Image (tube, rainbow, N blue to C red; front, side, top):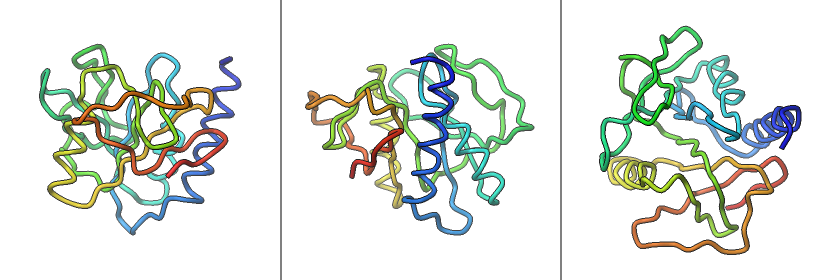
Length: 168
């Protein structure tokens, strides 16, 4: 996908997010720092900040551990964390109400493929035991597959938003 197409896709996903995801006042939303050709979630996060919501980005504490989410805004000092992922440096840890999850591939049933380390599966499973958390996958429509393999520890997304559709 060309860079201009990716910008248009991020704007389309942002539009669908704000039309179809109910946001409670003060909701905390965790996103991710986009790498490679992942859908740029920063469009959504910046708009959320403008609406008074707190935003967070993941912090990898170690292999096999759930992610923590550190508060993020445009002024946050960023560092390169484990696996070369950009993350906020030492800001407060937040417990999100909504987690925006990057996808390599997905199917219409809510299954996703990530990079295979299981960070999001462990994190979402842990958080859902503590509170009501909505896991929303973000992707390009071209990442849709008819079916994906799913293992017992894979956590289905509550919703997947692409540049063309919403899957629930």
